[in-house]
Image (tube, rainbow, N blue to C red; front, side):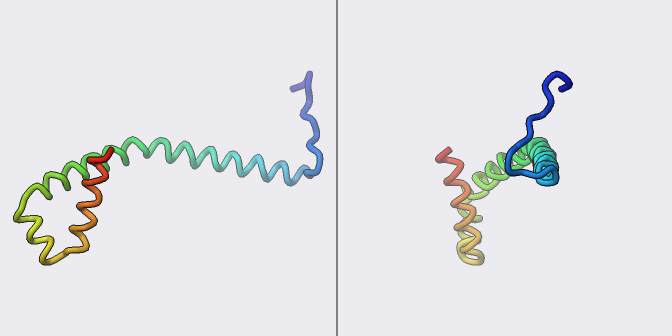
Length: 86
């Protein structure tokens, strides 16, 4: 850095550059947090879809959900269909 100092950026003040650097640092921190949580979230999703698939393979459960909670059954079926498509 001593050999090649930073080049001034045209059209931006020092405050604007500092603000952009601060926002970039915040975004990097948020990205790292999301990246760390991704593995656990993905595992939860895989286990949940597996459980729903097994649950919907039971005719009595499907009949009960169809009678009492048809909207929930439709969502469960969408989730299991997405798993099959992937």
